[in-house]
Length: 328
Image (cartoon, rainbow, N blue to C red):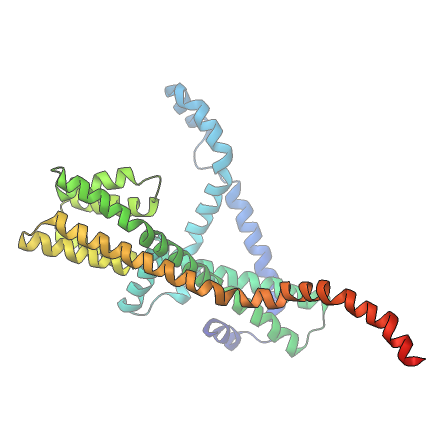
């Protein structure tokens, strides 16, 4: 609610809805101008098409699908620094924390923090515009209705945080479920004579279809190794970047094996067995909880129907026969 308090310190209650409506029209006009903007003259585009006639058809097919997306991306890229300015982290610790949350959800670009903060501000403004317009059109301008509109805008302000949390949770679960298979494949590669770098590259290639998240993480680690970063630093970043404890343990084991010269294959095999045991225990725990979780739908939805079917005919018979006899 910090953004709302800052907003109300400069703007009064009565001026909020007109400013919100004006902001909606301004944003719409800006979006239309960016959608119809042209980056290159048509003559230059035609010359490039004649230079590469084989790619002309592919470009035409992709142009229709990417036109709207490119316009929206350009608009967000231009507006993100300005929109994200009020929410920029105050120190390096908060900035690193935000980058870590975005990296755990799969957003690792340099522009990801500013884009995320600009989306939050944009949803706040959209919430103010929509709720303010609804109050102005359908209800009366009272303090209660205005506070309701502000509360709706506050909920929309925190929607990106909720979405980011669920994206990060789903990504961590995919890494946790696919890591034992990746370790088994890595053990086979190491025992076949490949080095650790080549084993990471081979695992990334083989797991591209089954577990794309792990493939992307290993590909990024391979890229860092190719540009010359130390192996210990690359493995440490691999464990910290994902936010998964098992991957951190794997990185620590590989660093120790590389440092002390112990068997990498044996360390990987032990870690794989430990992860499979933990995954089996979690599956057994979820299976044991199933009976308890089924009680609520049984009692609320299934048991009333069974009760009506079993007791209903007897109750109708009692009403038709016993009650008249008792009255007589």
